[in-house]
Length: 292
Image (cartoon, rainbow, N blue to C red; front, side, top):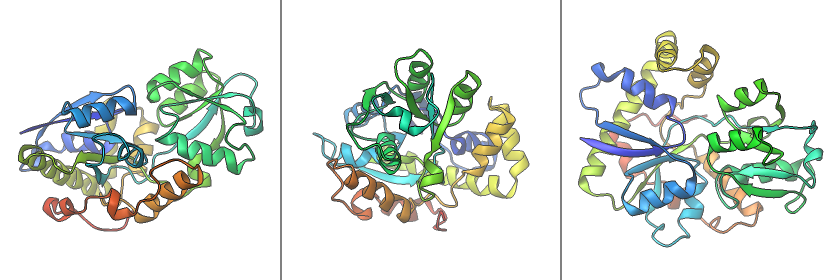
C-alpha cells in the first residue's frame, strides 16, 4: 500500500508516524515529494501525480474555483497552527517600512499571502501600498529573501530562524495577531479511487496514533525528530504545535474564510462543510477532541 504526498516540508506528525511504525499494525508507504509551490501541488493533485498534498488550508478556497478543482477538500489538520513570522532584510525595522516595498509570496491569490495581507492591513498598510512577488515555497522564499529579491516574506520554522541567523529581523508574527490561525491541512480529491482512500485512511490512523503517543511521551517524540535531522529547539517547537485532533478546527477555518473575504479574493463564499470532507473521520477512527 503506497500513497504519494506532496509537501513543502514533511510535517512533524508524519516523521513521528514513521518512527512509530513498529507499533502501528497497518501503515502505508508514503512517497513524500518536496514541492516548489502551491500551484505545483494543485497540478499534481488534479493531474493524478499526487494522491494528497499537505498545504495551507486557504489554498482549497482558491483551488475550488479553478478548472478541475471543485473536487478538492480538506480531510485533516496536521498542525495545531503554523508559526509564521514576517521576516525582513535590509534597513526595514517596522511594518510601516514595507510601504512601497516588495513582499515575497508563494502565490499572490492564495495560501499564506491572505494572512500576510490581513496582518499588513491591520498595521495600516492596505493592499496596493506594497508589491507582491510570487517566489515559490518556503525554501524558495527564504533563498529569494536573502539574495535581495524582495524586502520581506512570511517564514515558518526552521527557515525563520535560519533567516534571522543571516541577519534578517522579525517585524511581526501572524500567530500573535491571530491566535486561531490554523495549521496546514491534508488535501485530497473527494473522488479518489479505492486504493487512495484505503491508503489515506490507514495513514490518518497512523498519524493519529503518532500524535497521541507524542503528547504522552514528549521526550521520545523530541528524540525522534532530532534523529530525523531537526535541531533540539525546532523539535521542541514542532511538538508544541501538534494538533489536539486531526479534525480541522472550525474556528481556524472560519478565520481563513473571513480573511479571504476581507481581502476581496474569490472563493470566500463557502462554509466549513464545503471545504472539509468529514466522512473519513470515522473511517480512520481518530480523536475528535477540539484543536483549541
